[in-house]
Length: 97
Picture 1 (spheres, rainbow, N blue to C red):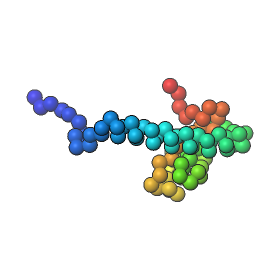
Picture 2 (cartoon, rainbow, N blue to C red; picture 1 turned 135 degrees about the vertical axis):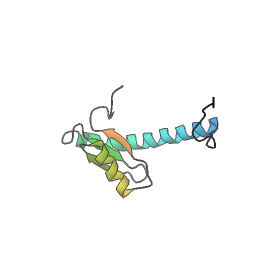
Picture 3 (tube, rainbow, N blue to C red; picture 1 turned 180 degrees about the horizontal axis):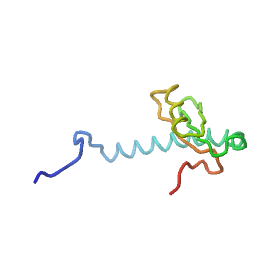
């Protein structure tokens, strides 16, 4: 019987690299959270429960009723960036736990 392992064993991240990646993602989210909190009061009245994809580098945001469309709009303008997704409501949370 052949033992199955990782799909790509050549890609092994150290604990330091994982911690660095998590810290970078947290900083990215915090930056986008500030942008969301700045524009959310204006948009909540007209676009309640729509989705907002924010480009962290430029601060541009894209809104649509469909989260896939909002994400596509962000990726078309900024193909190398990873947009952060929020829902335009009181919490900004997109899903449920």
